[in-house]
Each structure stands twice: as structure tokens, then as C-alpha cells.
Image 1 (cartoon, rainbow, N blue to C red):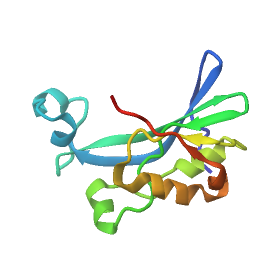
Image 2: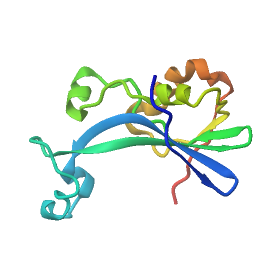
Image 3: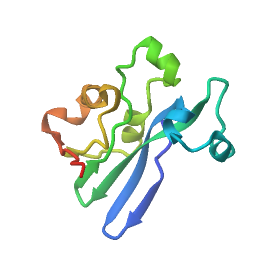
Length: 140
């Protein structure tokens, strides 16, 4: 079983920081025109110029309501994509189970990377995905 995720209280809300694992992406892709010399000290790249990224999924809880803010990458990566991004199966469900009985009536994805939403709905089968409302995030 996974460790209980870290939590903080913000007013009437409790925020649990769930994780869906780690992945690696090209440092140049992540930092754009910022020169490598400026970011490599805090984010050391591997031999393929990839930096480590955390897949943090905040769960906001207030009373009996909870909203999962992001869902990680999911589990639909091909073998080639798993090697490119150095991602395993993820830990999101393990962290949800470590919290105990938490009913999640709503989820809002931060973005839709790599088919994550469909993969997450597939993975959340034992968390009542039929009752889950997906709240879209509108970009300005």
C-alpha cells in the first residue's frame, strides 16, 4: 500500500497531494527558449536531455465533497511511449486507497495529455465512475 499522501488545510478545505508517478520529458520542450545553462542546475537532464517531472494530482476535500483536480497520464501509453517518457503504471489509485473511503463526485482535468481522461475513467471503475462529473476547465 502507498504512503498516505501529504495534506494541507486552506481555510475550510483540505488538499491532499496525490501522485500518479514520475515521468521524463525533453528539457528544451519544457523550458522553451530559456538556455539550458539556466535550468540544468535545478533540473538536471539525463543522457537524453530529459528532466524529471512529478505528476501531482491535488484532491480538494470539504466536508463530504471532493474534487480531483488532475489525473496524471493514465495507463494507455504504448511500450514506445513508456520508454520515451520513462513512465510506469502510476500511483494515483494507490494514493486514493491510502486516504481511505473518499467519494469523488467531481473531477476537473488540468489538461488532456496523452489520453489521460479516458485512461483515468477506466482506472476509476471501483470509484463509481458512473457518478463522476467531469468539470471542464475553460482557458481564457
